[in-house]
Image 1 (cartoon, rainbow, N blue to C red):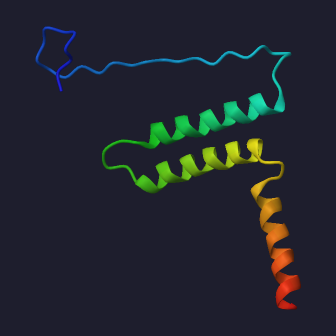
Image 2 (cartoon, rainbow, N blue to C red; image 1 turned 30 degrees about the vertical axis):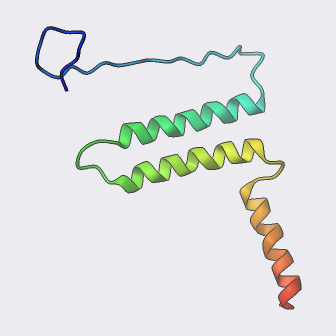
Length: 94
């Protein structure tokens, strides 16, 4: 749609840039995880567009969610899967 801020009837793209600044010596593992997750979201945005496969967008967003999950939970998804697998083996008797 045309931009309301312009006199032209042609559509105009507006770019919004948001920067996250972290002190070099103040960055923690959690900050690095957050920055990596944002990087994955940026990759998803870069892969969005007409005639581009949606699977690439989903993949990058999944990476971002897993990255944030690993930061929030006390153990990684891989560790959780191993624990569940070990618990199921004991229950089933394998």
